[in-house]
Each structure stands twice: as C-alpha cells, then as structure tokens.
Image (cartoon, rainbow, N blue to C red; front, side, top):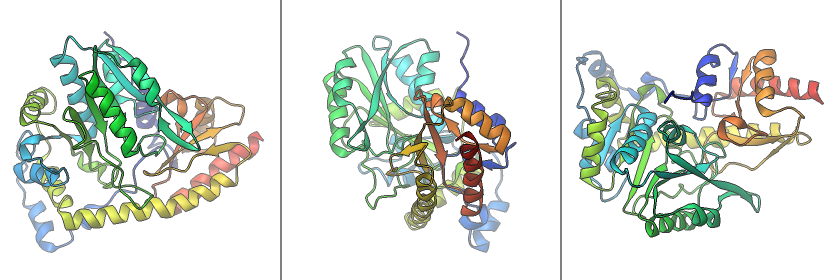
Length: 376
C-alpha cells in the first residue's frame, strides 16, 4: 500500500523555515544546550564524549530517570526512542503485528494524527470517537465510545492533554475510557507528551496505574522544551512488552544518540526537571495572556475555548474561507504559518501555537490581524 503523507508534518516541514513567523509549533521556546549544561564540568563532559553507539533501548540511567515519574515501574518497563514520534510508531506497529485477531482500532479526534495515520496506512479499520464541546469545554464523548468499541477492538488511542485543543481529559473520563477498554480486552494508548505544560495549577491526570493494558508515550519535546534532543519513550505495563518493543526498535532507528541520551538523563533529574517544568508553565501562562487578549480583539470572527495545557489554542474561525485556504493565504501574504483544522479532521478551526518568545509572538499575531482585517 502506498503511504499517504502526514499532512500536518509535511506542511510544517516544507514551510516552517521559509516564513518569518512560525506559530505552527505546539511546544514552548526551546532551551539552549548552555542552559542545560550550566557548569564547566558538564560542558567539558559533553565535549569529551566519544560518539559511539548508545544502549539501543536507552541507557539504564536514562530509563531509571524516566521510571521515576511512573510509580511502580523500573528501567525494564521503559523503551527509549528517538522522539515521541518513534514511540508512537513502535507502539502502533506492535499492536498491529502482535494482535492479528483484533485489528479494529479506535482513535480520538481531534488529535495529533500520527497514530491514526499509521493504522490507516496499515490498512486496518479505524473508528473515530470525538472530543465534543460540552458546557464550554472539550470533553470525550463517552457514550459514543461505548457504542463503537467491540471485542474486535485492538486498541483505543487518546492524547491527554490534547493536541490540538489543549484540553485535559478528567480523571473520571479517563477511568470511563479505561473501563470500556477493559470490558472489551482492548489496549489503551495514551500520548501524554504535554503533561507538565499545564496552565491550571494541577497536573493533568495520567492513565498510569488506572489500567493494566495501557501504553504511555511521551518525550522531552513539548513540556520540556528540548525537541532537538529527539528523546522519547514508551512506558509499558510489563517488562515483556518493553522487551518486545525493543525488538521493533532494532528494525527502525537502532538507538538514541549518545549525547542526547546523556543530556536527557540530566534533564530528568528531579531538581532539573522541576526547574524546566516551572519554566514551561511560566511561558505557557504568560503567553496565554497575550494570546487571549489578541483573540478577544477578533471576537467577531474567532471563537475559542481556553486551553487547560500546552501552548496551543484551537480556534473556530468565521471568515468565510476554508481554514486550509486561510492558512495558505496567511503564509503567502503575511509570512506566518499556523495549522489548519483540516489536518486534525476538524474543518473550520485553526491551531495557533503561542509558546514562542513574546517578541516573536506579538508581531506574528499582528500579521494575522492584518489579514483578518482585510477579509472583514
């Protein structure tokens, strides 16, 4: 089967370096290496590092550092990957390959479309269940999910906090989703890459510990502001599942980079992690203030639900143009890149990232205002 392009990633890859203002990113302004390696000794260690192959499933110190954030797990429950994208790929491939009698998959929409796209390209049956607007908030349609999950369902895939809405799935809804999975002996895949980037004081609930057939994927790219390290992971319910995912990794990228593995271990040290998370939350909260004021100034054509987490807002637009066409005009006429709702299977919406430096964010929003004003 010929693979269909991942439209969101393709549009970003082809255009993000050719525009003056890129607001298509969903993370916060990335850290610099010198901010992570803040002592002469650490800098010297990096410069003296021999660039051989790393441990293929992640070094023990890195896997131990990751397991610290998932109680009752050990290094042997963790599979380190090259970014969250590889973690999603390995999990999706494993679920397809190892469960041939259960190749019906359920996928939350809107969502980061990678997992659903992988399964579609594998030729399996995809059923969608929706986040819906309920009392001014995005929330999963639990009754819809109940109606479409069957004994043939291999897995249910969710993203929490959600991309593109920034919504947090509540603990009670997570439990309801897990109960539906359990009733049908289905796996539950939870992309939790935005945990730690909350606007609200409380951290988003995790599926970890709620259901014993859950696989969690995450990385340092979003809440940590370290996308260039390309370090992600899958948290597995058993050591055997982690070992099986390791086999799949042997056929993809082999191993993480040696330098990235070491720097990721530093970033996940509890003291360093706390500082990074505090920085991320400060960026998201402060920049949301800028974003909210701008959105409110265009209330005649833009509607929004405030995000609970992540430096993204999913905005309904009423300009009279399709969202994709609006994004293309914005890119060509104003040199600003944002993401169209069509890339999340929700036409009529725009995903706007606001995690960048305010000195970049404010003029970018001003450029969008220019086009909106011209269209009015």
